[in-house]
Image (cartoon, rainbow, N blue to C red; front, side, top):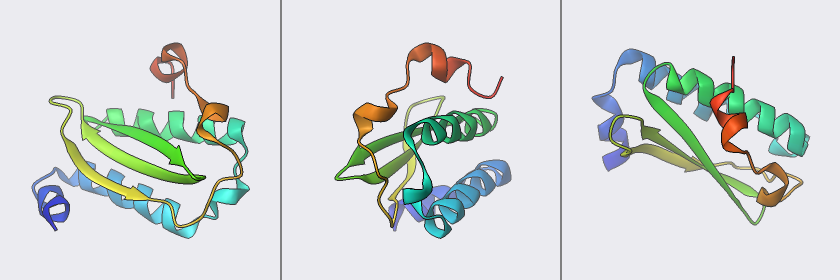
Length: 106
């Protein structure tokens, strides 16, 4: 409940970015991703989040993707959720380097 209330106080752009991500993850079969497509999608999505002062973090455990959305300014988690379907790969298959992350979306 606290996370939903926290989201209420965010800007319209931030709320919309989170809403779009949640919608995409809940309606998409994560098994359709391969490691390269997933890396590209994460970089593009994180780039969009950074434009509104947020950053997207993820972790893959037991092939489920756990997402955390943080504020860039203070690092506070403002929303987190997990995918409802599994990816067909492990986290080690999609490790992103700093260079890959910093050039995402450019």
